[in-house]
Length: 478
Image (tube, rainbow, N blue to C red; front, side):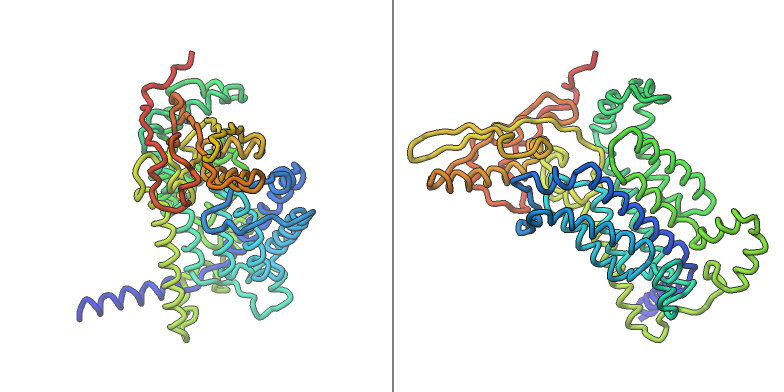
């Protein structure tokens, strides 16, 4: 009985804290920044003509498991789709029809994401996660067109859980980004050594990229930054210093590696670790009225919630419990999904099983080739196929190093030969060699296996050969 009572006390205190009001300006600024970043991303796709080359030009698309039914729009539909996405991003930033815009943008962006797993990027997955959170967060209560059109929704405060769910999301991202790098390859400076050496011509820092001591500082420093630094963002005394280090890290990443919007969306997300009223504090300081405005601000009772005893939804305890349950489910999902690679034998960077959706970032440099052999069992006739005949250059580069994509392409070849040559029981095998992080190339797919007999699933794949080439066999750079 005592344990139940104490448990109820803990839950009640947690509810009291999570549903107490805090200033909502952090959430409004986060909404604005998210909308701007996504609008600029749409422009990048438009002006680089990536819409055509990635989503119209290909004749075959690699699909995520369970989403094989997702197909691109016909004709110029993909251009219209991106145009609508750009408009929705503007609506989100301005807070106009915010909830509807956030829902539609999430659907539109997820559709693009699911079209072809060739283009999987961790920051696209992060965009979807953040977008889902923005759908349920009251991010339009301040600095929004909605608050002007419908004054009843205007409120300087939001529940504290809206702040902590965003903090938790970015904490999980940062912690996993560090934890996954505690592996033998990374601790032996690969693939970072190879990548940095190829960028030795960068101004100012390029000469360091060829020095092993500098590479070691970078490799081990990234682990420390994420595993130690991320939790220190939660501590006021170290928050600003860690943020400055993260800012330098993200900016250097932007200029060193071609990783799109990832540095900017994560850097912007790191701002949620500051006081929830940081935008107003910054604004007042810029106007050199910090003391006077802070006094007026605190007198208005909307600074940080410390003076408040009011609890949101206090008249609806069932809603508090429901929200707390959803938050718990969301966090458990975020924590457990990246660990699923532990259910598969072997090196995740090699077999790719559990690699996606797990923040396995910048851990592998893979090069490979794949030649396919199609056989008619009735006549014994064999066709040797180069994937370049059917895929774009980007698709070939990705497919040759990822077993699931090789299996999909083999099934595609089976369909083509069955339709065009009227062959029953087509056999497809692959000669595939891959180099991981500079190792000597080794077979990744069992060449004796008829891939048409393999059913696509999430189970461990025995047709993927284990990685047997150790890193110590790396060819030394001259």
